Image 1 (spheres, rainbow over the protein chains, first blue to last red):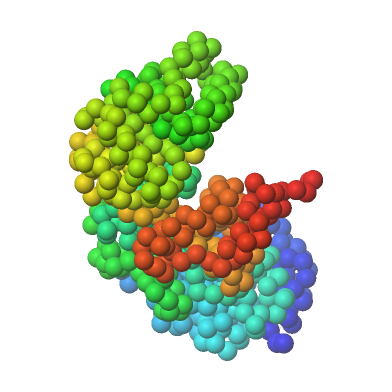
Image 2: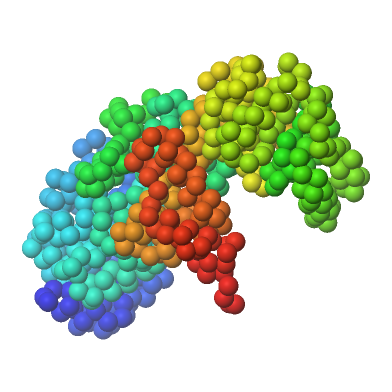
Length: 291
Length: 286
C-alpha cells in the first residue's frame, strides 16, 4: 500500500514524514513535541488545522501548548477569526509543504468538509496523515472524497472535549497499520491515548451523549419538568457531570443537532428521530438558558 | 413543617426514608405487615447510625434521639396521626391501589399520601381513592439516606398544594426536590435510558467492547461510571425491568426498546455484581 507505509513510521510521529532522512532535526522535533515546548522559529512539527469553531480554536491551542507550530485556516463565515495571542499559531489559507499532520474539524457541513479534505489531500505530502472528525460522516465516506485515501483516519472531535486524555479513533479499511500508529503517536504527543472503534456515524460518546440530550429535549417539549429540574435530577440522581440541558448548551445546540440528524439519516430508525424542540433550538438559537 | 410521618414498607427504601426523617427530628411510624422485616430494618438503621457516629458525621446523642423517634408498627391504623404517609412497598399496581384505599380510610382528610414508586403511574395508583388530589409521587433514590434527590411527581389529579407540601417536606429532610409530571420513568429513569440503551446497541453492533465503551464514557465523557459498570451495579434484571416498564407504558415507543443482549444476560442469570457475574466478573481475585 502506498503513502504512509513508505515513511518508515518507527518511533515518534514527527519522524514519519519528510524528516525521516534527517536524524538531527527528527531528534529535536521529537523532543520538543514530547515535552510540549513552544518557541519561535522553525524546527517544530507543523500541524495544519481547518474546520469549525470552537473545535479549531480548541485544537489549535492544545497543539500549540504541546509544542507544535500551528497553522489555522479560518473559514467560519459568521464568526470573526479570533486572536489566539500565541506566536506559534498563525492563520493562513496556504498549506506549506512541511506540515506533519492535517486536522479537519467539521461536523456540521459535509460540503465544506469535503472541500477542506480535498484541499488538504492536494497540498499535503502523500505520507502526511489526515486526522478528520468522523462524528457525522464516517471516515470511510470521507476517504472516498480524496485521492490518497489511505492517509485519512477518523476521530471523535466534539466542542469542549479537546482536552480529554482519551480519543476515539476510527480507521477505515484503507488505513494501513502504519497510519494508525502515526495517528496514535500524534494524539499521544498532545496528551491523548486512543481507543480504536468501528467507523460508524455518532461513534461512541457522541452517540450516547446526544441521545441523552435528545431524550431531555423530548421531556422538555412534553413539559415533564423544567430545564433546571431536569439538569438537577440527572446530576443528583445519577451523578452526571452536567445536566443534559446545560451540557447541550456548553457543546452548542447546533453541534448536538448535527450529530443527531446524521444518526437519524444514517441509522434510519424511528428511535433516532430528533426531538422537534431541539431541532428548532438549533435553527433559532436557544431562547432560554438554564437558570 | 411536618412533625409526624408514616412510612409503609420496611424494606431498604422504607427504612432509609424513616432514618432520614428521624434525623430531621420528625416522629416516624414505620409500618410493615411483617414483624421480622421491621426488626431487620431497625437493625439496619441502628448499624447505619453507628457508622455515622464513627465517621464523625453524627453525635451519639443525635443517633439515640433519632432512633427513639422511629416507632415500628404492624397495624395500619397506627399511621392515623401522620401528616404525610410515604409508601415504599412492592412495585405492584394492584397491591399499591388497595393499600392507598386503606390509607385514605385510616388517615386524616389533610394527610398527603405519597408513593415512592420509581416506575408506576401515580395517576393509576390514585385511581382507587376518593381524593386523588392528595396522592403524589415522592421518589427517593437508593440509598435514601445519602442520595440528595427527590422527584415529586404530580399525577393527573394531584393538587398544586399537595405538590408544594411534598416538595417542602423533601427540603425539610435535607433533600433537593424536583417536580415532574406523571409520565413513564419521571425524569431520571427516563432521561437516563439512552445511556444504557445506546451502550447496548453499540455493543450489539460491535462498534466497541464493554471495556472500551465504559472507558470512553468515563475518560472522554467525564461520567463517574461507565454504562456497563452501572448496569452491573444496579442489577441487569432491575435495569431491564425499568426499561421494559418505560417501553410498555409508552406503548412500544422505539426509543425505549429493550435490547436482546440484556435479556440474554438475565436469562443466563448474569445479573451483575449481586451474582458475581454480569458484563464484568466479580468472582476473580485480582
